[in-house]
Length: 232
Image (cartoon, rainbow, N blue to C red; front, side, top):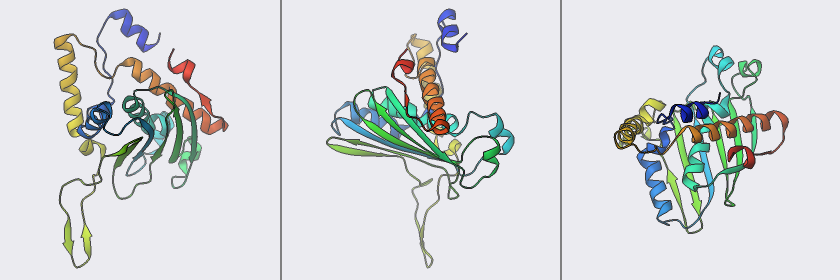
């Protein structure tokens, strides 16, 4: 039985942890897009760069780079554009961590997506970010653009004889601490008021289908159509 079928059968409220929807920067971008601040969104650029790769034992049993990392960008792209992803092409290489070959995974990947509303986008995922945890996105609209996210861990720049520098965000726990708190608050409010969360098991199912299609595309070299599957 699919999770969504079990959720429906039991009649429980289900919220899934796609925390970027609750991050203040992404949430502000959503509000500005809905208000028409950049016109019609036509292109999404996103990347998830991890500071390092998990050990082989984790990779062997993980869903792969598209499922582990890019899935969050697929969710944000759908959410910000208010449109479903209808096709995807996935590409990937092992550039640093040779054990990825044995696990049939990659440490650098790129997805090209197309939306039902005519928009498009590209999404990078990487386990090769030695400078820190780097999560950013851009939404290009017909009348402007939005840049989402920052590298800075603190609003402090150090100037000395060596030049200037600032502290980079070290990990996802630090980057999304506020988002996790707001996510929990939202879930409690939905229970208290009997409301539907802004991200549900249906979203999670669609996002997983997209990530699995990207993985299949990488291995087959084929562009995968998602319209019938994702909207079913």
